[in-house]
Each structure stands twice: as C-alpha cells, then as structure tokens.
Amino acid sequence: MSTLDQATEAILSLLRGQTPNVLLEDDVCDREDLARLFQATNALIKGFAEAQDFIFALSQGVLNVDPPHRNFLVSSFKDLHAHLRHLTWQTQQVARGDLSQRVDFLGDFSEAFNTMIEALREKRLIEKELQRANEQLREAHAQIIDSLQYGRTIQTAFLPNREEMAAHLDDFFVIWKPKDVIGGDIYRFNSIADRFLIAVIDCTGHGVPGSIMTMIAGSSLDEARRNVGLHDPAAVLQELNRIVKRALNQHHSESPSDDGLDIGICSVDPEAGRVVFSGAKIALYCCVNGEVREIKGDKQPIGYKRSNVSHRYTNHMITIDSPMSLYMTTDGLLHQIGGSRGFPFGKRRFIRFLIDHWAKPMGQQQALLEQALESYRGDEPQVDDITVLGFTIAGRRGRRHEP
Image 1 (tube, helix red, strand yellow):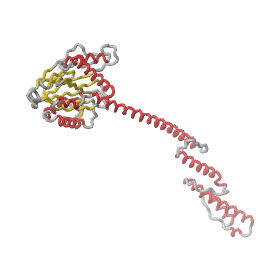
Image 2: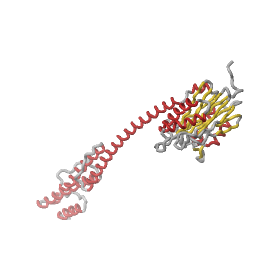
Image 3: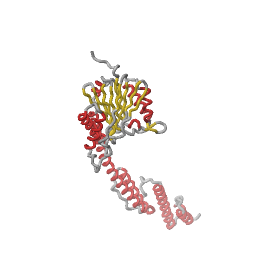
Image 4: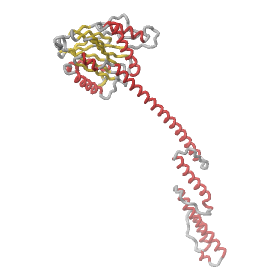
C-alpha cells in the first residue's frame, strides 16, 4: 500500500470510529511533505484514542478520570465532565440535608432537579410542622392522661371504703371496670348502726362526662339518704330523681342537657334478716339453694327530663331465713358482646353463672365471673362501664350474736 493510501485509510478508520495503528514514519523515506502528513495523522490517531477512552469512561459514569490535556476532540465533553462532577457534589450536599443547591446547566434536567429540590424543601417543612404538631400532641396526650389518672384517683376515693363494707357484710365482692380510665359507673355504701344501704349506679355516658355524672349522682344520693333515711329505698329514689333534675336544671324543658342514671338500691337490716330493694331500671338477683329470682326495678330512670318526679318507685321486701346471695349489675356486663356469634353476654348467661357458683365464697365468684367475661369477650373491645356487686346475708337463724 502506498504512503498516501496508508494515511487515507487511517483517516477513514477514524471516521468510522476505529482507532488505526500508528503509521510508521520510516515508510515515508525522504519526502518532507509526506513525513508531516504522517506526523499529523499519528497525532490525530493519538488524540482520537485519548478522546475515545475519556468519553467511554464518561458514558459509564466514571468521573474520577481527568480529561486528556489539550485535546480539542473532547472540548465539549470537558465542560460536561466538570458539570457532572459538580452535580455529583451537589447531590451529596442534598443527601446531607443542604436543600439550597440549584442546577442551571443541564436544560430539562436542571428544571427537574430544581423541582425535586423544591419538593424536598416543602417535604422538610411539612415534616418539621408534623414533628412540631406531634410533639404538641404528645404533650397534650400526656397532660390528658395525667388528668385522667388523677381523675381516676379522685373517683376511686369517692367509692365506698372496703373495710367499712367488710364490717357490715358477711361476704362480698365488687367488680368495677370503667370502659376508659374513668367512667360512669359507681357504687355506694352507707351505714347507720347495724343497718346499711348499698347501691349500684349507672350514669349517662362513660369517660369524662360519665365520671362527672357519677359525682353528681353519688352526692345527690347522699343528700337524698340524709333527707329520707335508710328505711325506704323507694322514697330515696324519688327524692334522688328530684335532686338530680334540679342539679342539672333539667326540670326546665329548655335545658341543653338531658342526662340521668339507672340505680339499684338495697336497704339491709341484717339482724332482722330483711332486705328492702328498689330499682330504677336495675334489677336485684336473689340466690338461695341454687335458685335465682330476679326482682326487676321500675322502668322509670332517674334525673332525665322525661323522668317523672311524682313517680313512686316500688319497694320489694325480702325476708332472709337462710343464707342468701344478692347481686346487682349495671348493663355493661349484660351488653358486652363476644362469643363466636358476637352476641351480648346477656341476662340468661349471667343467671346461669349465678346458679352454678352462688354458693362459693364471693372472692372466688368474682375471679370466676371476671374470667368468664374475658373469655366470652375475646378480642372484642369493652363496650361500656361494668359494675357488678355481690354480697351474702346469713339470715336470721344463721347469724352469730355476741354473748
């Protein structure tokens, strides 16, 4: 191949993207013009090879290579290389949290990058606001929980003293399970000499509103008892109805509230072996020798606008000649759903429990009833406040008298 043909083929190879072998200048002989042609062609071949290596590395994302020195073939790629290295640094800064970076040298990519940065900035602002809001919510939640816990302390202190109850009752148990930290169920106990009054109260609502109602109901019951005495539970309920309606201003039809309570109340004379029961929508269950008798309360609730202050509640006299177990419960127990079909626990299941266990010690009955309720409830949430009170009266012939 002639000298010119070698140079021509080398240039054509370059145009095809191929890197030819360097031309041997010894083949030029003594012609100066051909020697210069070979030198220029070899310089072009060398520059092309350097550019090809650099551009290939750039296309692979390898930015830690330096562009070839004084190589016009990669002039534009040098700028791209510098921009990409700077963009890499900017991206690292963004990853470290610097959202002030902006790109203005890559056309549509710059716009997309800057839009992304703006979105990240807005996201950060939103996250900061959410974090601040969450901190405020945590503080508020902690304050609410602290308040509720202290409210429970107050409400628990408002309940009867167990030692006083134990001094007058042969045996008893109380299950008091508010649906929330505090609730709308309470029980009361008052005694004068050997006679005592015991009550279970279910107020409107649960949680904070219910707990406020329990304070009104308990205080009102104490006032009604002082006004009427212990001997006539029906009269106590009638007086309680009047007091609660006036306390809530519900004796006026324009009152914004319409709240009240259900209650079962027993006046007990252990020495005489006599119990007088009166109820407003709460029943008394009497168990003797495996038989259970339900004594229903009146259907007239206490304190509501519709509650009739002239209604005379019914007294039920129970004579106890042999040991008897007596129970009162709010509807939280009876209405608790559970079981395989999601039905309420119900009165029938409660009576069956009493038939099976009434003769056991009251502490054991409490444990068994709580276990039965939890087993029946399963994964279902507690639907209402629950209060169950059981106590035993030995009867006139069964009581022991001091000499």
